[in-house]
Amino acid sequence: MVQNSDLCVFSREIMEMRNTTPDFILLGLFNHTRAHQVLFRMLLATVLTSLFGNALMILLIHRDRRLHTPMYFLLSQLSLMDMMLVSTTVPKMAANYLTGNKAISHAGCGVQIFFLPTLGGGECFLLAAMAYDRYVAVCHPLRYPTLMSWQLCLRMTMLSWLLGAADGLLQAVVTLSFPYCGAHEIDHFFCEAPVLVRLACADTSVFENAMYICCVLMLLVPLSLILSSYGLILAAVLHMRSAEARKKAFATCSSHVAVVGLFYGAAIFTYMRPKSHRSTNHDKVVSAFYTMFTPLLNPLIYSVRNSEVKEALKRQLGTCVNLKHQQNEAHRSR
Image (cartoon, rainbow, N blue to C red; front, side, top):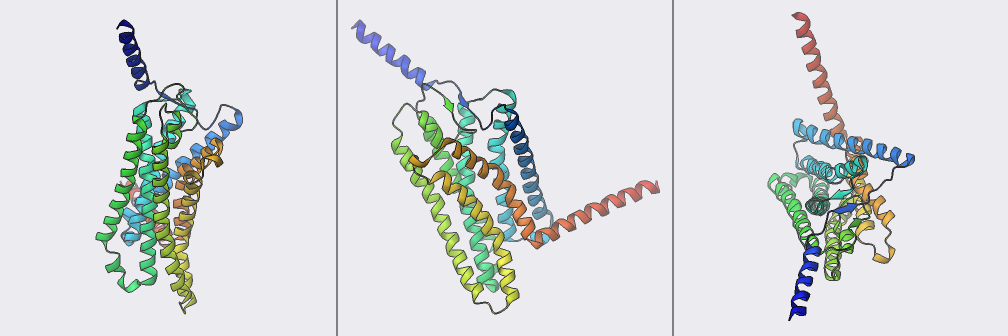
């Protein structure tokens, strides 16, 4: 009886140790060599530029009435998602690198696990909504106000956020429900469910398979809608008699196609490869690309390739210059 009682106590202690694990350790992206310090500074400059570019895009769309259309509203949501994506991973990564403290709490890890699929999945569906917007604009321009009404635009935007959030919440809750024992070192620069479950001291195969299927569906379903939209757009453009109309249609859609290619290329490489073809270093590089560099490229692509955005920027700059001139004149008159 005493032996059985001791065994029960020992089993409870083991379970308590497994369920009260210490903080996780993020091994990070850089070490403290001179080359990596230079790369870290370049990355911070890239991130700050990305935040500035996306914030500027949102401000332009908000301030300029000519950009108050469904297309630019969806673009402002894309910029918002990109800013949140950068803010989810980079501040913690930078703080860990600068302070040398690589720990992240379970709550902090859960926040990152929630927001990454929320923003990544939401962006998949948002890009599909943007593709539908371009399809209606090119193929049915006279019916655009009806087929792409503000009500439909808002519904598609809300659905994109909700589907992403549902995926993020499910991943965060299930991932953190597993017991973690032994090493708590995450060979990454942020918490991600596929990486974290490798540390679980439980059978996670069912969850990993379900997560893989979910990721594939969230990538391929919007991608099929995007490809269908642009297939129809291409067919319509090739039947246009006017060379000017074809040029304008291609210019309108090329920016979006470039963004889709960058985003889906990185996402498919990250989440749809078999385990046997995965490499930790490759995963880190690709993750850095789609969490830091893609958000930088999106506003650059849309500003360089979009004449309306460039004109809006010129108008806002002109307004600022005139306001500054008026203030100087008022100051001189005093």
